[in-house]
Length: 198
Image 1 (cartoon, rainbow, N blue to C red):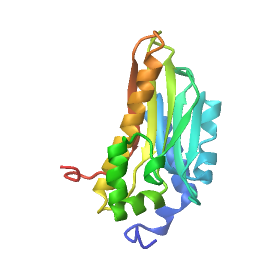
Image 2 (cartoon, rainbow, N blue to C red; image 1 turned 45 degrees about the vertical axis):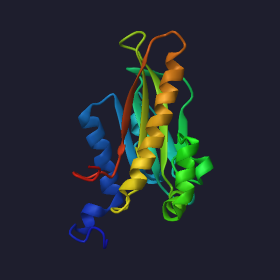
Image 3 (cartoon, helix red, strand yellow; image 1 turned 60 degrees about the vertical axis):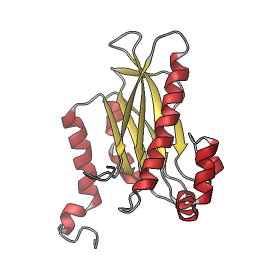
């Protein structure tokens, strides 16, 4: 309530908002959708998508977080071409994905950033999809919700670096099977505002 004091209580009511998310997803008519801050109630409200031919994966954030990310795709357009995966963009330097030893050492040397990375709950999720309307075309789709603090551009950049490094490796590995290159789509709430990274 304090965070959105400019909104009336009826606008903030979860049941109403959940139905609006479902309505808007159907209205947009996309083939792939990535959602963030999805809790069990929102996931239940999106259950009708299954009957309309949509598939999905859900990944809860780390620790005791009640929400996570959900990645949806239209089954008439895409088929899952491998196991869904998740990446924890948090933890101690040696546990973090996509960091070379030099980056891990630099992170170890910066106490505050190291401690923040260990405490945050950020996740990413992904799937390799086969495009049913374009034989031979595959796409690696990922979805995430990066750390939110307004004074943590460095943390978001580190998370984005880790994620893109991991995705590039996965796309290269998938493409090494001789079936052609793999495209990549990144969806998410990057918590970036104009001028934040420049």
